[in-house]
Length: 309
Image: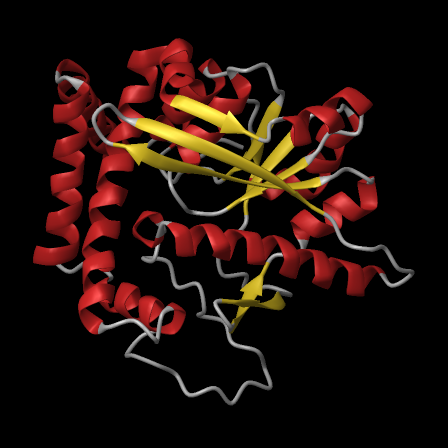
C-alpha cells in the first residue's frame, strides 16, 4: 500500500525537483563537481557520520597509516556526493548515454543463465555506482530486476521508480523479495541485490576484511535453491572527465553438499571475498558511512575499535 502524501513530502519533493532542474541545466562536469563539493562539505566540514567512516576504515585497514585512512575517508565523501548527483542526471542522458558511459566485462556469466532459462542471482555492494550498474546491463538487453528499498517520501519513490523503469529495470520491493526473487528466476530473469548492509535479523557471520560481519543469507540461498548461478558485479568509476565506468562481473560457485546451511555459508563467504577484493582495489569508492560491523556475533569477545560500530 502506498503511504499517504503529506505536506512535508510535498515540500521535500518540490526541493528535489528544483535541485534536479538546476543540475540538468548544468553541463555534466559542473553538476557532478557540485555533488562532489557537497560530499566534501558533508564529510570534512560537518563531519556527518565521520566517526563511523573512521572506525570502519580502521577495522578494514589497520595496517595503513592514519593519513592514508583520512585521505580515503575524504575521497569517499566526494565520491558519494558525485554519485548522488548522477542520479539526477540519468533521466537527462537516457539509455544511450548509459551505454556510452559504461563498458562491461563478464556479461556472459549472466547471459548463460538467461539463455538456459534459469536466470542468475546478481549480487553487488555499495561500491562505485550501484545505480549505474543495473542500467549498464539492461541497456544491453539483459532482463534485470533490482531489489529496491521503498523510499520514505512516496513522491520521490514514484519518481525514482519511473526513472529506473525508463532504463529497462523491473523493480522488486524489498519486502516482497522472498517471493519475487524466486519468481524472477523462474522466468529466466536476473534479480539484483545490493547485499552488503549489516543484517540485523538471523544474520550469517562471514569474514569481511578479516572481521565477522552480519551478512544476508538470501543471495546464496536463492541461488542454491533455484539452481541459478550466483554472479558478483561491481560498477567502478574509471574516469571523471568524462564520467566513465567499468562494470566487472564474476561468477562464484562452490561444491555442493547435502548440507544446505553449510553451502549457504561457504557461498556467502565466497561472494563476500570477491566484494572485498574490489573494495581493496578502490577503497575511496566504497560506502564506509554504513555501520557494516554493527551487529556482532553473540559469542564475540572482540574489543571494539574506535568510538562507533
